[in-house]
Length: 231
Image (cartoon, rainbow, N blue to C red; front, top):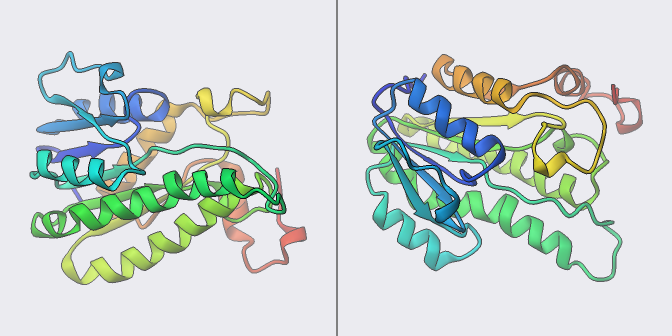
């Protein structure tokens, strides 16, 4: 388990949505510093002296390298940034899927690679935010990217566990943020989701299943895809 008090945390996508809640709740739990990363760092609330606004484009290798140099003291990484396109997987133009994979999969992998050694030195943690759509064939291209994150998170956990790094996968349905504004379906409170994630980190969990839908679907993975409950 990873006690968050006095840790130094980097949160991607920290300028809005769940990212802002991560920053706020981490401060409440007594972290020493939060690198609040966003493509436009001017949108980050850095009113608390423990918050360092960090410009970071997770799809740009040079930006990732620069962030790793600036935030050389990180002990916990929260890969929260993500995008959704929801394109058909059969579209002849795969640019939407490529965009999602660059941000949702390759971005977290690049950051984990850049920070893994220093996190291992400090016995810290990596958190990857995935989705219930890792296991359901809805959301089209977005689900493909999140299924890849699920697999990558499990592989990362096996590789880093001998080095004392906790790797946590986060799975949840709709959350009441801008990303889910396109639907009127029931949504989880982002503050509650973040609370569960941080509780899970401190409890030593491998996975956080943040709503009832996700818990139901996770329990049915041995079933054929058409038999998994959607509600």
